[in-house]
Length: 331
Image (cartoon, rainbow, N blue to C red; front, side, top):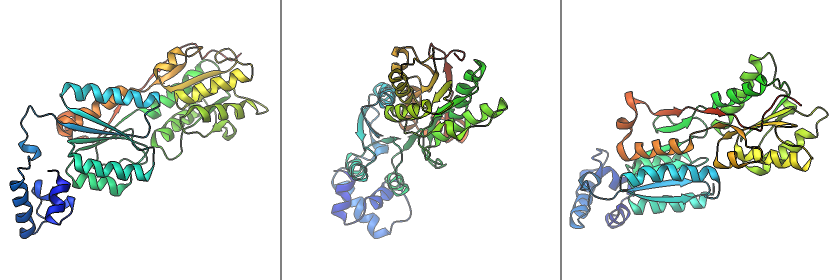
């Protein structure tokens, strides 16, 4: 019997059953008695009563499964889940409300031990519903302003953007374009702010003509780079806020008869495996995606107070510039 089955039989909401299981006081004595009787008659095994050898279950919710970014996140979570001899359910919601609602319904029936959200966003009401179920929740690389009540794991995106642009400035570039990420995504805004801070530190102002928005994917990198090359004064270097956008910029340069590193310097962000395979190998900011996902899994399985010291709810792992052959002094 799942929590949803007990709720249906008792004629109450899933949240009410969860409150009874977790000992909350906001339940009437009559309702509590009815739910407790059903739990007992159906031999419902409470989470806290599970034997230590029992296999747990973790839900990982992600936007898409076909990107290298997603593969790194799944790999990091799976490594920790396997160490704990637990099960992993991966759901792609494609940022579609219907997919999210279907997953929420399945989560209620499965009785997962924890949820890791690595999605663009999840409505506040649905996050509240997860908390009402008493399921531990951790967000990887949060969008917007992270809810301080929900543990989250991210990277030092501002410092990464700063390091990428400072590297290009150190090579002698002064006209530097940026292929930015989505405006509503916190990590994208932080990378753009780091880029701006590096320019201002060198006595330069960001040129709006050299800023092109995107969505972290190959197509917007290709389009944005083509637009930058069409300017009367094209940039001599470009900071792409994701490796996929950087590889899109590579393609735009190839179509124009140019080459990254030789004609235009390109820096990416993520250090996906494809970055070192590219031609030329891509200079990029390493974002520890797998480590971020592993940390989120440990928080879910071991408890936030066990993994994060001193009541912390937000952890940022360090980024690092990896220099390869796609950057050089201006031609």
